[in-house]
Length: 388
Image (cartoon, rainbow, N blue to C red; front, side, top):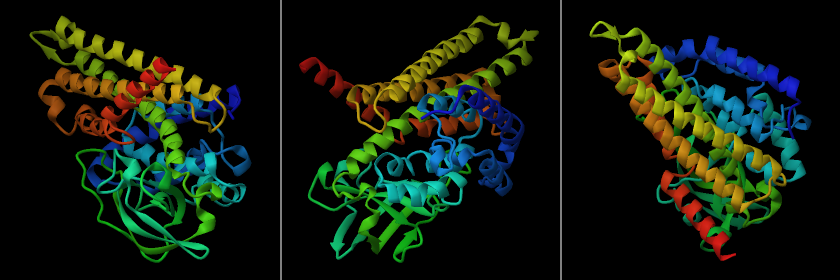
């Protein structure tokens, strides 16, 4: 699935203008008030951003992965909280339904996701299960035509906004094979939200615990209708999500580099612009080279992702996705650090965008699989290929 080239070019140009004229000017408000203004959320819905990845048959735009990463690069040029409003919704929140859901589940949920009526969150992480997702403890006990869920999910993005969760719970024994994926409406009795997390950065994003106490979920809301497939669903969903985080990382690095080059051309010391000093130029050059390398990697992997059978698992593609996530998020950390250095003392002051991006960037090396998890995925796949 993909949008035709002419329509996509128009969409991308529209997103570019929206970022430049609407979102970047609102960054100060976001930082001060820790919220995305409601009128901007409404504008996002009218632009179709809540339906970017939902197929046209369900009311969305239906972008390919290659197109999606291009849009996410543009969205990365502003505060990540803006994309967070709808990014989880069209990404890890609903992709499980799109990839593995029954026809009835797709018809019931995806049109509401695409319109923005329904916000979905992805609930996998727990207090004792993050990186080791196969060891999650949230239980789902069969009870007639329902399952009764008990457990706690942690750091769940958009949970305060969510109308439903793609939620992983244990229906069987230990390990990945015992995990099932559920669609859990947020208004079911027994669901409580913890207090909103106070984070180092990413002001305006919403994360909190989701606590389940004897929550009765219809068995018909197991994604795909088959228990025990939830871990596989989660991993497929995370592959696409990780690639898009890589694209966002490149967009953020581009913004930091733009801000740094502009500052270096305007800030004067010793009678001339600091950009004329070779050591400042070296920092800008290193950032440019790493950014171009990362962005090329993202686009190459996205093309491979689109070539594999839709929604199928491909260990080689998954390994390449991990390479992109590892390189681009680490690259962003280095670019953001250099950006602060180019700005000198001003880079440590909240009024300057590089200070905010420095804090915002740190999270990208942690969520949807830490850098170390990506290294393990890459290493295991290389050894598997060597043995084969």
